[in-house]
Image (cartoon, rainbow, N blue to C red):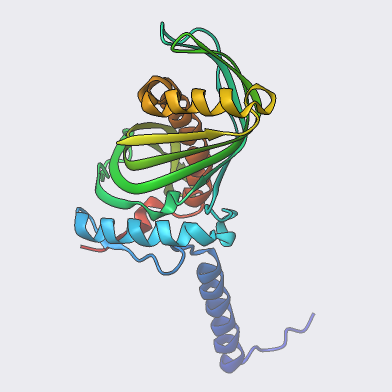
Length: 261
């Protein structure tokens, strides 16, 4: 068997191709934050707030490379409030095809909790303020509000003024190929509002007098409905945001979140 000698130039060329292939593979595998979001130094809350605002603005049109649709409006399938709630409110309310308008217009006021220790769960606490959120949905309701009967099926609009929301997001790190990726374990949402105005079409089969009278009572006593419905809304929002953040965090190693010190 005769072996043909391999020239040094051929070896150098083969090595160069190999290095180039590895380099291209590394670039393809590297995943960064979607533009215009940039990295911050660890612990730089001012920078984190700036990126949070950029993320909200980006979310308003969607992040297709992450499989995240436009969040204007933010859509939920269903919100339910069923059974006896308290002495003033005894209703079965089902909201479907729910849309939150202006949800991404919030101002983020605080964000803390990132840790360098990936062996323990992180609790990321953040807060924002939104001057006005409008919730639109289809609805079906039956029961009593302040001993007054309520019954109907149609379109529902709720306008929430000066919404202050606090999020506590529990994250765990999953190791893959020597890197750590954040997994959203839970999102707890708490909110306060200064006022809620509700409008519902086709109450009492379209009886205008009864509808206007009841809606006036509801809006004069808006906390009766809001105090019971808000936790259901927050629970549904938490589940939706968890779904979206799982997509966002899925392919970005936590080691690549921050600028080197």
